Image (cartoon, rainbow, N blue to C red; front, side, top):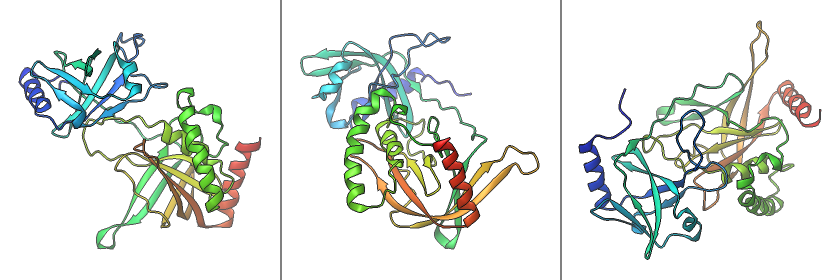
Length: 309
C-alpha cells in the first residue's frame, strides 16, 4: 500500500512546482470539532462551499507561504480558520491542512510539514435500482454505462424542498426561480417535480478534487418517475447530448428469489440540459419516448404508490 504522505524529496518537488506558479487550488474550511473516533477535523459539508482559486490569484513565496490576492468576500470568512488546500501535481491529487491568515494584501497560507495524497475508497455498487445507458462509439460499436441513484436522492417519490440541506437552499431557490421561467417558456418540464432535484444537485456541487486528475465518474440518477429520468454529471463527464435519443434499461429488484429483478427497456430523449455558471455539475432531463404499455403501467404504479400513499 502506498503511503498517503509525501516523502521529503517529493515534498520539495511539489513546493518547487507550486512556487513556479500556474497551479490552481481549491480551499475548503474545516470543522473545528473533532470527528468521532478519529480525532481528526473534517471538511464542512453543509453551509460553506469550497472555493477554487486560479493560478493568477496565487503567489507562492520561497518560504512556503501561499498568498491569495483579491479573495472574494465569502472567502474572507475563512480567515483565522483551519482549511484544506487541494490541487493537482502531475495529475495526482494532493492536499494539506493549514491555517488561513489575513494579511494586508489578502489571505495567506503556510504550507505545513506534511503534504498528503488524496485517497479514495472504491464504492461498491448498491444492490438496488440501476439504469444502463447505451450509445454508439467509433467503428459502430455500442457501449453501455451503468448508473446508480445518488445517495440521499429518493427515486420514484415526490421531491420535497425540506430534503435540500439548509446550507444549500438559498442557492437552489435562485436556480429554481430561473428554471421555472424557462419551463413556462419552453413547455418541456411536465409537472416540474424534477426541478427540485435538479436545483439541489447543482447547488450541492462539492468542487471535489479526485485522487487522479481527469478521472471520469458515471452519471448518477437523481430523479425518476413514470415519464422522466434525470442524470447528474460532474465536470468533464457529460455523456448525453441535447435532443438526442438513447437506449435505456432500468433494473428493479423484486424481492423474490424466483425472479430477483425486473428489467424495463425504453428509449429516452434528452429534452433539457441544466447547468449554471457557478457549478461544475450538469443535469440531463430525459423523457421516455418508446416504452411498452405494461412497463409504463409498472412505472406509473410504482410512482403513484410512492407519491400518494
